[in-house]
Every structure is written in structure tokens, then in C-alpha cells.
Image (cartoon, rainbow, N blue to C red; front, side, top):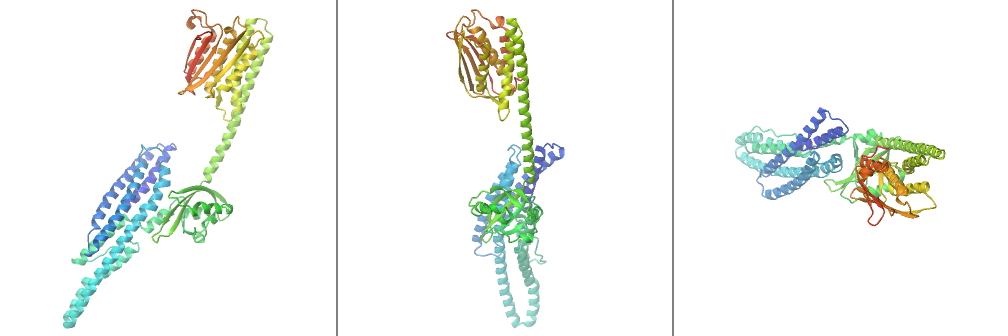
Length: 565
């Protein structure tokens, strides 16, 4: 059972390692095969453990020495077996969840934080307790058998007093058939109790002692399958890549693995008995003591600290703390520290790279804005030098379109993330620019805003800016003919992932019989084109009382709409 249980743990770790390789881009056949094989071995090992565990329970219920209190022993065995079964069921569930390809990508966190500590702190102690109870029972049975044997010997001695010659022969036979096997039983039981589960009793007779020896060998075999030997666990601990430190209840170091000595450059015997918090920055020791010594939580505590090597070099580590109680009920602290120096360096490089890219992107938006401003200035000069009013009007329209795009880049340049722009604030500034161009003293035109704060990407900001520019310019040109004042209303709402824009005026409205398909101007063609780029729809109609309404809707941050960027 032990080999199956250990295989499930080791092959789960192997499964997570291979999955990690595949997630980093290694889709080779060998990695796929390793993932499939690891999952198969884990599931088979868990199934085998359950089967072997039931067989062990059945065999352990045989009363070899015919003891009167054997029923109480069976109850204790069943209680410990129930505890072990509960621990295994939880471990079994978590392990199968990890190797289940349908369960997401949190396997490493579950294994490191839950499964592996749970195996060490719960499943393994349950096995050790079961082993301790079984060994005690074995010793009691041996003592009972030895007592019976001694009684038999005394009876034989009494008989030999009556028949010395016959007694000598009989004593020799008894020694060969009873005493020596009992000594073998005693010696082997002591070795099993000390942790050497490989020992077996060899008796070449066909009596009750031989049957007893066979039962002992069978139970020792079952124990060796259900227990983890001390040397095996020590090899597992020493092979860990993370630093493992076990301390007593006062945080004095009792055990360290090889990763501690290689990372911190200390020798193991030099660390033994030292105060664990001495390995950290001196100004953090009180905080460490408060964090770990007074921790009453059942869950592991994970924190990041700076540890010191023997040469006083500081390295960043992530420390996971758990607590256990040994067989004497004494509290022990277990610390697992992972060196994250490479991770911190990678984070620093990424941060510096992002800063460089932010500066570069800011400069790009700034230069685009400046270049568009230069073009706008050139158009302004052409307007000054143009006598033809229709030509000047076209140049002004083009200048406003360029200003609307320049304003987008200016907004992005002013933002911290260079990605999103608040289209509501942008709209107010754009209307201000249009008012400067078309403002006349003969007409008083007011603009009312009812706009939610909506963030859109550059991919949508440019088409939206051109849509707003074209719509509002058309209102200034055509909506208030023959009127000395007017009102423009602009509404923006975000509903169910769609942006809804309404641009309305209280002007003269559309002429009777207007058909946008037949009577559409270049401005309407541009509005329709921009709306399609935003994957949206638009509707141009007369208002309920007077004026016109332009209704536009499109999905927010759709990937289309970048034709003018």
C-alpha cells in the first residue's frame, strides 16, 4: 500500500511538472505521453491502495494469540482505520481533481498548499499511529506467547526432575522447537518495532509457532506496504528543491534538508539548535515571532521575507508555515522557504521594460498630435489664402476632422495607461472646438450634455470622434437656417454592452420626403461608413416636435473600427 500511495504523490508531482512544460509551450509527444502516463499511474495507485487497505483490515482482525481483550484491539484498529480512510478519501479526492484535465489550471497551487502538506501532516501521521498500535499489540502477543512458553518450560523441568535422561532429550527438543523460534519472534518483533519493516521470521517447523511466524510475516508485509519508512521519508525531504526547516515549539531548529545548506551556505550541524528567526533580518524578528509563534490557524501561513546566508547576503523567500504534533504531543513548526530571487529579478526587468514602453507610447501619441496640429495649421493658412467660400468651407471641415483626431491623441497622451479615453469628456472638448470655428454673433447656439463616463479604446475613439464631428458640423451648417438661436442635445449611455448616442437639435428638421438613400450627402455617406466600421447602426429622423435626431448604437470596445487610426 505504501508504494501505491507514494507513487500517487510522486506521479502527481510529475504530472504537474509535465503540464507546466506544456503550458510554457512544450507540446512535444514525450510531454503529452508523460502527462497521460502520470495520470494513469496516479489513478491506478489510488485504486490499488483502497483494495490493499481493505485486505489489510481483514487480516489484522485475526486473534493470533487468542487474547481476551482482542475485541477492544479490533475496535481501536477500526477507529484508526476509519481515520486513515477519511484522510485518504480527502487526499484521494484532491489528487484526482489535480490530474483531472477538466478541472482548470490551479493544480500546482492545490498540490503545494494542500495535497503535499496534507499528506505529510495528516495521512502519514495516521499511518504512523496505526503502526504504533499494531507494534504494541505484536509485543503484547509475543509477551503472552513467551509467558506460555515459560510455563511450558517449567513444566518440562518438573518432568525432567522425575526422568532426567528423558528430560534432557525432551529439553533439547523443546529448545529446538519452541525457545529458538520464540527468540526469533522476539528479535524480529523488536526490529520491526524499531522501524525495519524488511525483517521476516524464518521457522522451518510445521507447528503453531510456524503458523504464528507466518501470521507475523503476513502482518509485517502489510505494514511495510501501508507505512512509509523513516529513510524513505528522509530521502524525500532531502530531495526537495525548496528549503525545509523543522523546529521545536520554541522555534529551535531540529531538522533541515539539503536545499537549506546549499542555498544559505550553512552546514547542517551548525544550524541545529539555533533560533530559526536568526536566519532573517534583525529588524523583522519581532514581526516573524508574532506571525508564526502565535499562529493558531489550521491553514498554512504564507508570507514573503528576506533570509540571510552565512556570508550575510540577503535573498527574498516565500515562507509557508504549518504546525504538527509529534507522537508525544509536542508542538512542531514546519517552514518551507522558496528562493524567489530569479522571480524578483524578472519582475524588475518587466517593470523597467513597461516603463520604457509607456514613455515610448506617450511620445508616439505626442508626436502624432503635433503632426496633426501642423497639418491643421497648414489648412488654416490655406483658408486665409482662399477667396472661394466653398473651398474655404471644405478646408474648415477637413481641419475640424483633423482636430478631432488630434484631440483623441492628446487625451491618450494625458492618460496614464495610453489605452482608454473617456468619450464623454472628449465630446465636450470637441464641441468646444467646433463652436470656435462656427461661432457667429448672429446666432446663439447652446449645447446640452447628458453623457455617462464611458471608456473606449483608440480603435473606437477615432471613428467616434469623426462621427461626432460630422454630425455636429452638419447641425451648425443646416439645422438653424433662418433662426437666430438654437439648441443641440447630446446624450451618451452604456446599456448591456452597447453604447447609445443621440445627437438632436431643435432646428428646421429634414425636408419633406427626405430619403437618405436618394438625397444623402457626402456627410451622411461618411456617417454610414463610420457606423459600419464600429459594427453599429444609425438612424436619422425628424424629432417628435421639431428638429432632427441622429441615433447611433454599437458594441463597446469591439475590435473593428480601426480604419482611420
